[in-house]
Length: 285
Image 1 (cartoon, one colour):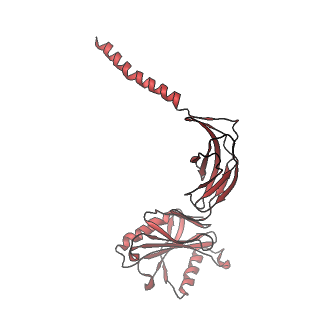
Image 2 (tube, rainbow, N blue to C red; image 1 turned 90 degrees about the horizontal axis):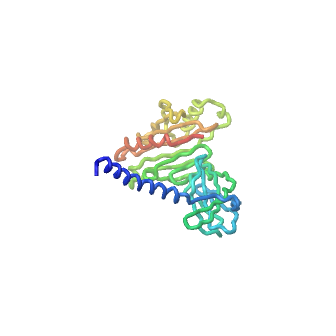
């Protein structure tokens, strides 16, 4: 057998299995189809919390189940649940982000072996989770913040009145932790139309007149995510050396962000660096 014939035969042995494999996939991957005659479900009620949404829908006769789709902040829809019991018409979507916009829709389906036949989607419903604390996230009407839950642990949180959240790192000893706290400062009516610098000066003056004064020294401003922050340092010995307070404007009011580490911390410079790395995660509204 000459070399040309051998080469031709070898190429045929390689190409033929590939063609058969391609034909197999073309004939077996189309498992889903839509049926306009299949009645589509209707979303009847939505109950929202800070980290979950419970959705209810109409029951469709003769189907095998439902699929639930969500879209977060205008992203593409994703199927987040398959309901295999056709009598079920309610589902709680967990692990959501607080203060976040979502869209929901539902499809009914009939299953025949591996083939699914879907109804059209229900009309999309828009909703928004409540402000508050969810895993690695806090939101309120003034700001939101994300953090790495393997490093930071949340403490006090109030999304309704003070818009405050306390975080600290997870060291066992309280002396080795970094502490982070955000709160809202409502400005007096007469200051609402004043400049940012005048509001900061008023904040420092009021603090100096307080029994628990920090004796703030104002340092240079800092830009974070395009937002101007006034940087203050508490000089009163009661607050230690390793501290920093940042003030920024949110509407007519101010946000106070306090970062601190105990002076006898094992590595205060590294802890202060951790605190500074958390600041870009704040989104002021």
